[in-house]
Length: 202
Ligand SMILES: Nc1nc2c(ncn2[C@@H]2O[C@H](COP(=O)(O)OP(=O)(O)O)[C@@H](O)[C@H]2O)c(=O)[nH]1
Ligand SMILES: [Mg+2]
Image 1 (cartoon, rainbow, N blue to C red):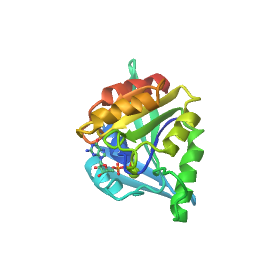
Image 2: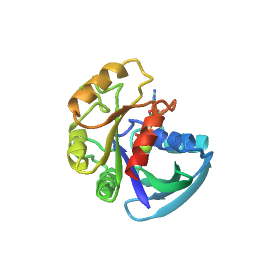
Image 3: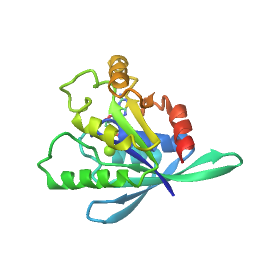
Image 4: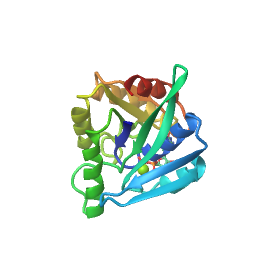
């Protein structure tokens, strides 16, 4: 099955996006399969809103394993299934906590197996160079690494926040030549364009 990986720094909104995108594609319940860096598997079956409460949050590194959901997109008269994978947040430098380092390595190893890579950046912080969620070294590395595939796009998230407009301009400038989709994962804005892009790639 084709894979669509959602990658980016911690707290940029990856988990909220994956679940709200699932809801946008018509799911009210999701089966979330997770696999931690040690290979342990778990299945959670939840209503989308409960999943958002359980799997996302203000704490950095809430997601420490790969979490995948099987979704369907309409193609002609039929449907095409694909797997959307929520990943643990990347960060610049080396984290002191070994479980976070392992989770990051697991995320990067999965980049190779994905047909689509959605690289999420927090547009509301992108103008603010010092902020943890601002564009960092790891974002440039992901762009370098992932751009070799056709299915690479940047999601400029949190466009509902006032500082995101200037952040979006900076993201477009810094990642020139790559498709950039402004979205609000929280409010479902911009999902139509993301859907169209994913459909082209899978
Ligand atoms: N204002 C706003 N907040 C968001 C948006 N998307 C996510 N968040 C918030 O950002 C925080 C981190 O979200 P989460 O999905 O856990 O981030 P992850 O670490 O990248 O998976 C949570 O408090 C979310 O409610 C958005 O589009 N707009
Ligand atoms: Mg997360």
